[in-house]
Image (cartoon, rainbow, N blue to C red):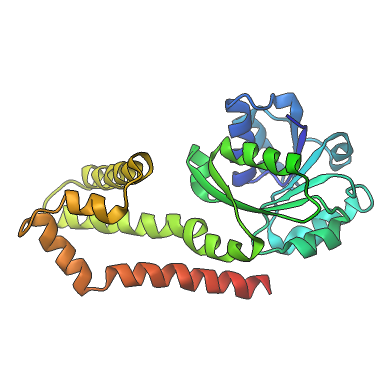
Length: 263
């Protein structure tokens, strides 16, 4: 594995670095991070065992993984001017297009990533797009990095807005649904803690069934729905309230907003 330098030591950088160490794809000595926020550096090191170092140390590493807020990107890269042309640059700065990263770094080896927050517990769903100058070895490396904290798929850069609306923003929709299910359970008399855990485990188990069986969600839904039964009655109400359409519209609205921010 190449040596990786994290520019930014926030939660997502911590998740990725921790995943690399935990999976033994990297040792802690093959990773390092820099952040202007001292508290973030301390938390990063405590969680991963990876050292926070000075920005000048970046030149000793093969890969620069950008994990700063998009509005901070230009200022964060300014001290590295002229030092990045031959580096592999992996960016998780939301909404910043590959062309802009090429402009700021001078490197043609760019891979832009859209991760999501479940990477913090090793269950991320990420997608990435590579610049034309990225080599096959670069793409394989990024896939390995992201696979350390979940699943990863290569897409076209123009598809990353859709990924943002689906898996990037999707955890928030799921949290909202878990809360709604738990509230329903509480309204029917369940204790709050039990209702929340049952709701969360229900979504986790259902998602695992989709992934492991390879069956279409409709087929799995039919298998648990008896004619005239309890599930059928609940699904009727969801259909009446346009649940399916609302979820689709949420993804599309978030994707639209991603395109707006990227432009």
